[in-house]
Length: 137
Image 1 (spheres, one colour):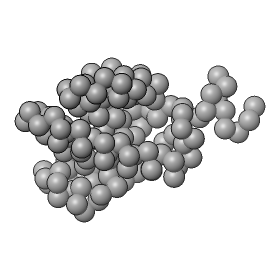
Image 2: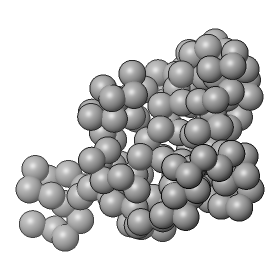
Image 3: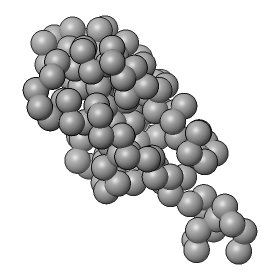
Image 4: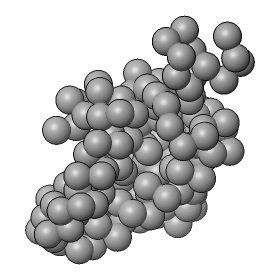
């Protein structure tokens, strides 16, 4: 078995490293915009901004925040061995910021009529973590 494959022949799961700074600030009630400014690489802060904007009816703003969180998450995944595919388990808490940003991007894309991106992001979310897709839907 190759080192990059799991027992089923696919790539191994990617587990992002712990990043308690943004998570702790958000949990303590800090504004997501302040957390994103202090930790701009935090997908979690951008995902929370996307959620707040969407809930307030600002789909385009939500899309922009979600896209930022998604791309920051892709950067982090790649730095941690992800090769463009494979599981990103929801069960591993540090992965949740990326997965939330991906779900938020799908949702906002659908809201603004970006059907292809909605479908691509929805598929990517299901392929990365069926649990996240179910939890965040």
